[in-house]
Image 1 (tube, rainbow, N blue to C red):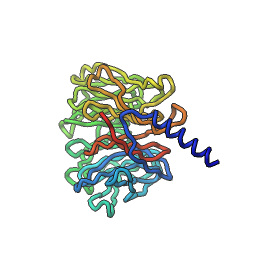
Image 2 (cartoon, rainbow, N blue to C red; image 1 turned 30 degrees about the vertical axis):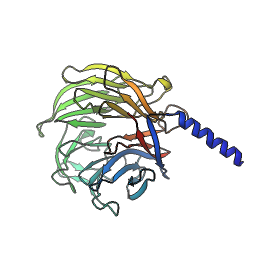
Image 3 (cartoon, one colour; image 1 turned 90 degrees about the vertical axis):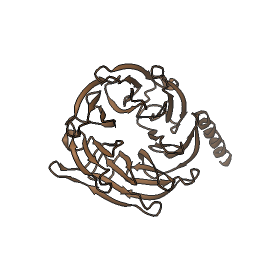
Length: 351
């Protein structure tokens, strides 16, 4: 039996070794529950943390030693298949897709010793905030909550910069269901999944949201959007089997132009689903469910080329297993991936 286990382990290592390119394994952390999204946080003292959405709460993991990730805090919450996390200052803001948590606010000032938590569950004049699918915080500290139980799932906007501990509600966006949001320079890139479109809004006037243009994405199930550093190209995902990551010239939102579509060559036609795309410099870093984490060279957005990968899921292709989230923005360059069943992975990219 011992020889059989050893052989199995060696085979697994061989397979894992063949399933990575330019993303090197550093460590991992297992959980006794399923995971969802991931975000990162660099504390004022330079210590980096992984902020992990779990089925029953939010896990805060110290990466002071990246080879030995250690959970230093856990904030319980209602059971949910999805949590989304963003940060502003020394606070984390968490939305939950199920239950009644509202907006969870975590004060991380005293990490790694402790955290404190407050909740926003009521918006005066709007109603009781129970759940939201997603959250994005722009460069000015405005938080855009998407897919909530209020405003027919349209955006709800809070000011985190004025009061990090208890952001003030400012305005509601269009009452069209928003699955995910990306915002920069007063422009909102809205993933309207039920309509299958990327909608671009001018929001430079906080009291007015003006539609500039719409673009149907390839599988008409627009899941998320991220913008290139120069602001000229938007990259989208459709959360459908065999769907691509698409690139669009959005330099003129009234005349959006398709540039290219990326699909992993190794699993073409195998029902693999793209989840979320992020942009760092000229690279796309994508959580790609059963294909794990994938890196794409987008320096020429009309010719997207895979240049890196790390497969966290070594079972069958296709379906909603594997890498749910990927975070590439830590100052150290460390990449974090959450696999639904297999835990948190800490990786080093070579780009």
